[in-house]
Image 1 (cartoon, rainbow, N blue to C red):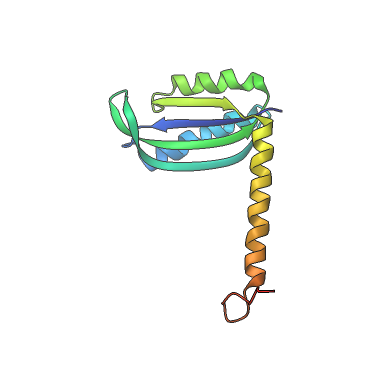
Image 2 (cartoon, rainbow, N blue to C red):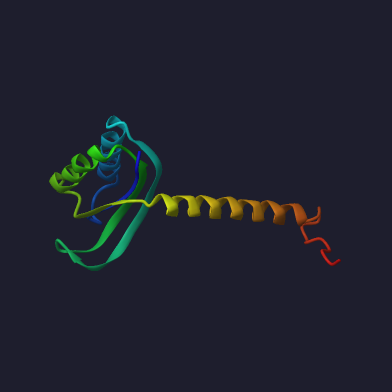
Amino acid sequence: MPTYETIFICPPDLPTEELEELVKRFEKIITEGQGEIIARDKLGRRKLGYEVKGYREGFMCYFNFSCPSSLIPELRKSYRVTDKVIRHLIVKVDKKKLKEEKIAREESQVEEEEKSASTDISGERGNQSG
């Protein structure tokens, strides 16, 4: 299944309960359509680059998910008919980019493990000179 990223922007004055409800609704659309949510992040209240439907700020939410391509039009339609979504974007993630990100994450984890292994009991770095 292809992997997608989506971000949607809600009005900044939207109550937290309603925002949670929206997030759950969009997650449900993805999971019921045989999709799988890989990552979910609330990016918080952000200043927009330009005014969108009368708002200079918005609350942003991000999903990384995989699903059949037939589900995307349904998700787009759901975004469009929801008044509380002032802007949305869905993009297909390149497989090459996914592999590169995965390799970068693994390398950073290895580096962190090496750093923690090179510290001695007192918390200082060990002597690494040859």
